[in-house]
Image (cartoon, rainbow, N blue to C red; front, side, top):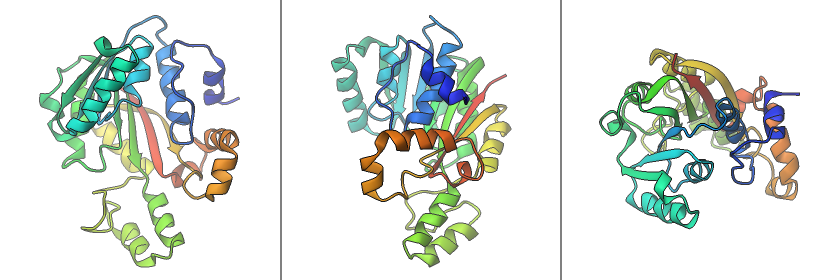
Length: 254
């Protein structure tokens, strides 16, 4: 039985939303972290948390969450969502982008930091990760989700865009030039090195959306529960982990 399987079978304060191929692995890892400190109300920082897909369930579980996001529309939706869920007093919205994080949060103030789909678009990912690490209390943890490089190369090639796939494979940052929507993509070693340079100790790396983006829609939509279980089964296993659309790293400040 894997750690993810054990987590799903363990009752906890965090129920979370229904599991999907995009969220099942991440929620399993987060739930395990929260269960390490049962009964504690944690201070959570969600960088790029948008409309509160993670923040609101965490607040419903009794934790206090600050969401930093550059979009005022997303933060307005977050505020409405938190109010509708009855947790408005436990959710705080702060407008700002990841590159300005160091000036937006107090050092050593968070027990848990989420940084999902942010490091691909900021100006200086090293500085952002350093700010994440500084925001954590000793022993605090960071959940970091980044775009996977290998999946982008394979996806472009499978769709017949061999020139774009070649550009992604050759570029040191894993981007295809000015038209690319992302400024960089990562492999597991590169992402782990980025976190390690900020003093964080990477404890786990999982693939997210290992198969979900490449299966025919009829298969994915017709067998959602089976797909979630298969995603979870492959998430930490080579070579499938490294071919995932996203890589999820869970790290801790010593």
